[in-house]
Length: 248
Image (cartoon, rainbow, N blue to C red; front, side):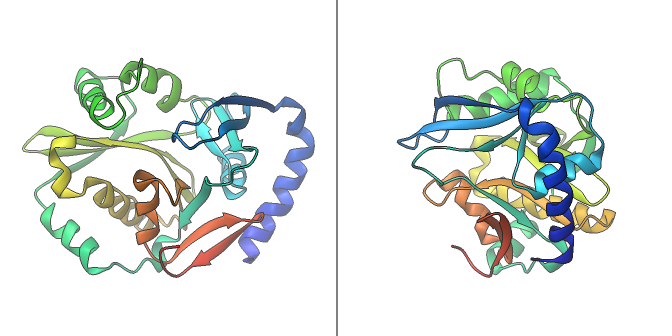
């Protein structure tokens, strides 16, 4: 364990003693359609210092709206937090090709907004990729993306002015947290999910951020396991971050 992670673990242990009473367990149907009940260990927060958010991320927690949570599913440990250290990233041939083929895209940074074009693209993405009942873009923005806890931004990808992708990210002094990414499903050949991670890693390097949190790695779910193609990557296993040199 690095000295950074050791320090984070020490500070987080002190936080846990203060915050544990506010966390509850909530059991729901697995959002990744695995054959287990998903149990979210979660609590709602008001505005918190970015260092506190950093400690939660470094301890395997995620954000959903104003809620911080970790998975505590009985009989299942498929959801594994994953992060990159952008300065260490080694691109493979396919990733370099993805970056090259998308040079015609414009990339812009702005606040998280429920604009008509954002909602339209997000709804198209959800309808094609996750066509579940009541899976609505408005609900994703109001209940998931928007937050008053920490600084949150959108990274928008445009093709000839048209919005084709949007990433929602949290940002601190030393870290970036990838909350969600949606894109035009008609542009699958562009591999926009791969492009987005490459873009986030480049932004981290430009801003001197050492840690890029990518959410969960789930080996059996294609939409969640492609993250391990970025090497080296780190998985949060047995209470500590462990480096993985290749896809696990």
